[in-house]
Image 1: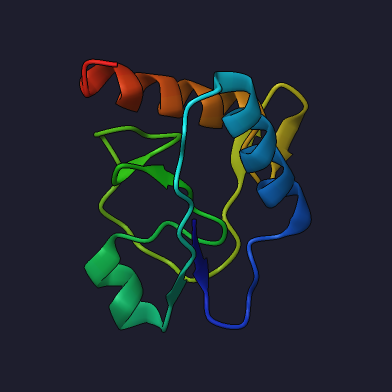
Image 2: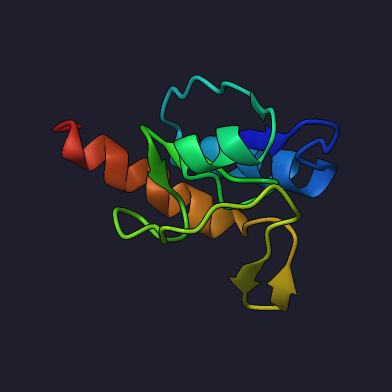
Length: 104
């Protein structure tokens, strides 16, 4: 889980990540990465706080992540509208896809 310096990922993002891991029943190691500023954001292709990647792949955009980078709040399209955190189902799908790519 990536987040900008001074801007924690947020309780809902962390809760949805936990729910997704539980739902998939796949052993997942979670790492928190603090993005230092705009230059670091550009180097990491950081899309804003919070950004969740599974094996380096963005949970929302997959392999087609946009080129832009920013250090502000990131919004995700969800069944309830735009939210500043990803839906647990989106995260779970990314975990399952990564597991399948590894032959799991």
